[in-house]
Image (cartoon, rainbow, N blue to C red; front, side):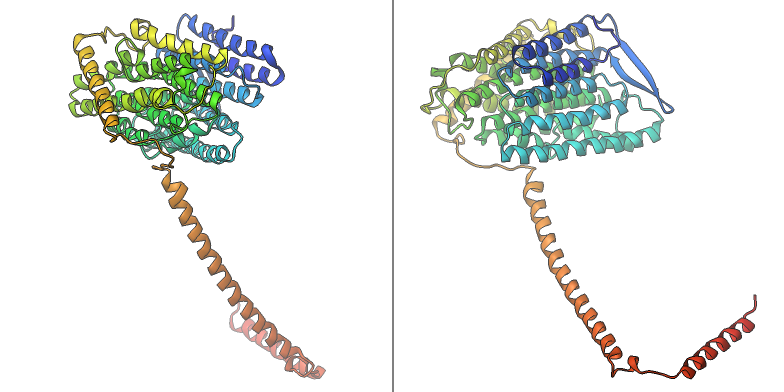
Amino acid sequence: MWSSSLPAFVPFFAAAALALVTRGRLRSLLMLAIVTLSGLHLWLLDSEVLVTMSFLDYELLPYRVDKLSIVFGYVFHIAAFISILFALHVKDTMQHAAGLLYAGSAVGALFAGDLLTLFVFWELLAVTSAFLVWAQRSERAYQSGMRYLIIQVLSGVILLAGLLIHLKTTGSLKFDFIGIDHLGGIVMLLAFGIKAAFPVLHSWLTDAYPEATPTGTVFLSAFTTKTAIYVLARGYPGTELLIYVGALMACFPIFYAVIQNDLRRVLSYSLINQLGFMVCGIGIGTALAVNGAVSHAFVHIIYKALLFMSMGAVLFMTGKIKATEVGGLYRTMPKTAILCMIGAASISAFPLFSGFVAKSMIMAAAIEEGHKVIWLVLLLASAGVLKHAGIQIPYFAFFAHDSGLRPSEPPRNMLLAMTIAAVLCLAIGIYPQMLYRLLPFATDFNPYDLSHVVTQTQLLFFAMLAFVYLNLQGIYPAERLAINLDAEWFYRRFLRRVVEKLGRWIRSSDQGIRSTAEQRISRLTAYLAQRHYPTGKGAVIRPTGSMVMYIAILLAAYLWLLLSFPH
């Protein structure tokens, strides 16, 4: 067994190296075996682990295992295993290696005990994940991946700036509570907010995730944003600003998701909606709220992976993913449809499904701390997520209309990965204590309190009733081909126009400056030419005596200056 001080990211990087030199079944077995052994090793750790090292005059903690990091470590290993299993049929070496390096970078960030180590893995997350977008090998994927990479690297640059300010302010690089009481903490919060998809900073997610490969999107859904949630939970619990940021995140994606035609883009907006609940819980900051945020991140990774896998299976088998192009697939893909509905029930927080046992903790914490308006906002967001992810995804993909497509079920490895995720969704929902005992704070919370169950059941019932009514009345937004831009409009349209106009102004100004300069140079050249023509004054031959006279005059002036102004 590996040493307890062996950083948890090392097995992932080793598996990525082996993926580059192996093929076929051997590569598949090695990837699954190494991730499984790494997860078992983490599970069998007896106590907290702390590895220190010196760098210049600072003490670094490149590997720290505690209750907060280890619960994320468990679910990251589960997500990596499911994602690898789902992608086993893919013969693309780059995707396998990039996926493992990406998951390993996320794990490395989880167990970073200092901000410098966190920064290193923060940037590795950006670079390795971009390859999962480019792996689609289309022009749209290339452009989207470049935008994604620029924004992700920008997050790292901002983090480095905040880190240096924090170091100068506090004299420490240790990664614990940071807060926003000083400039370094505010700057780092902005960096973390980019990866957490804060409002206005979120469009990289909805731009890039739908352009990735069917298997790459499953990896992407699990790691980047949840790593950001982890660092917020460690560095900013109880930061009141996050309550309102989270509430806004939970609400605004609903309106964009409802009008989306691309079903993977619907899930991308849904992902931001769910992140809002987690951010809000971190902002509330009580033990119950942080437990709720962590548990919600845990279950969300699994059921969101299940939903992205089901849509990835549809895309893989049909080559289509738009609501206007698919439908009626339950006839030939019944297993995928059932598994998708389990994921939909989980994200909608139906009782006995995993989303219910996590989301109810955040809602209860909001009420306990007197945030009644926030509770109502989150309640509205819960109804919205049922409509756009709980109903819209399975309905339009499998039932809405008959597209005429008759694909078979996806490969067995894809079905097995979806089945594992679905079983976990049900197991955690039925027996939540298996999750609660892993949380950073001890809790006796009972999600199946009568008031929680009745409130959530009523909410879901009326939300479904509203969807059916709106759909029957023709009021619900119809599926249609369209491109919807939100915050990305600023850099994909507005800034592009600004740059184009600025470029035209610079070109026109440059032409004017060049023309003026050329005219003046031509005049100077003509003047000099005239002076030095054989008939010009500059070409006149003068006697030697004239030169002697000029030299004498200059010498006399020099002697006068020397005598008039002695040292």
